[in-house]
Image 1 (cartoon, rainbow, N blue to C red):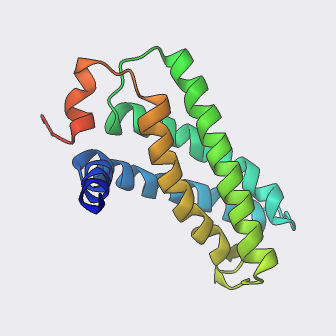
Image 2: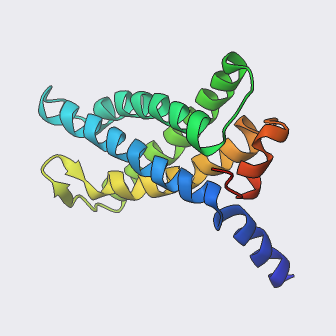
Length: 159
């Protein structure tokens, strides 16, 4: 049983698709944290949750473009796909970022900052968001990509 679980985890996370997703996830994370930082500092939004929502929205748009073009190579209808993508991302982002940020920052009280007005709690919450978003993208959003996407899903690279 352990071997089957380990094989499934390797299949999910140790392939070219997940590597591409991790790179694009890093870019999206930088967008998210950058917007959050800028809104906190430039606009002076004193409550962290006011800066969090615009950061989530802009990072979702960035993630959709990167995921559709580079990670999953989808050929589906853009309208239905973007609806599923945004819905899945909003749920994962709101649950993991708001809940994670709240637990780390307010409940545990870990208020250390990477740089002024950019708490570590945000970075910690984003780690869980990246994994959740990969799973939502793979199993909910880009599921019917057809034969064109079979090489990307299996982790093979035809470039």
